Amino acid sequence: MEERLRLVQEVAHRDGTWERLNTAMREVLRARSGRNPRPSAGIVDSQSAKTTGVGGEERGYDGGKKVRGRKRHLLVDTEGLVLKAKVHSAKVPDQDGLRLLLRSARSELSHLKHLWLDAGYEGRGRRWAEEVLGLSVEVVRKPPKPVPEEVALTWAEEWAKEGETIDWQRLMPPRGFRVLPRRWVVERTFSWLSQNRRTSKGYERLCASAEAFVYAAMIRLMARRLARV
Image 1 (cartoon, helix red, strand yellow):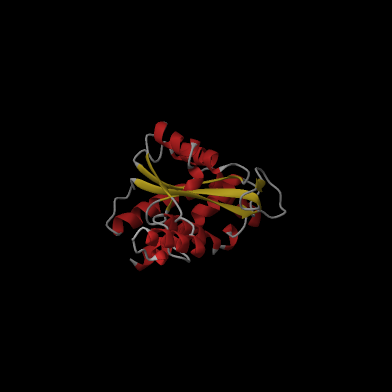
Image 2 (cartoon, rainbow, N blue to C red):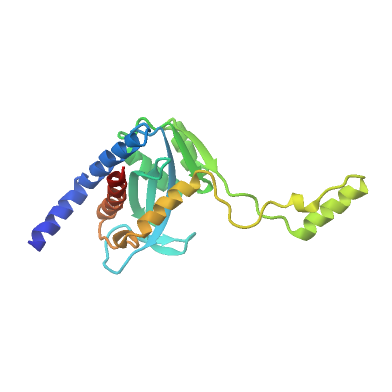
């Protein structure tokens, strides 16, 4: 019985059953909340996840995050619900990972018009999305780093010599954590996935299985929401 169940799971992973169920439940949930079932805008980001010692395909080292394993690329709607997931080696740059993600979703998400990205996709990734897919792309950037206090004070003193009174503290951007517009939505989705045991790390041998468990985690979340509606 256990072997049969495992075979059914493998077939479901590879033939897209979990993805189709994720799409159906997402559209129902959006419709019940009064939104268009098919979103016209999305947010893309990636997360590098450590893999275990079980082996498997497409593993690499992400030099930026200092993580050896795989990278999860997600396209989510403005509610944080997954539209498309793509798992690949962590060594693939974000610009190239964006192509892998959107190419796999091209036929299914023809209604998508606008995309929010972070600065890591600036360059060939953004150009490809705009020129090849015809999407409107907006890059959400981090706030500027704070100016050192001594520098701001020196600027204020120089302006004071010219007869202008400047509050040097106003020259410095706010310190501490700041929520980035739209970016927080996809970061919350990654947090949801991290709370699931099977997606807390890269446990799967196949990238297709890892993608299936992303959809399974979102199905679990949406089922709870639909039960409350």
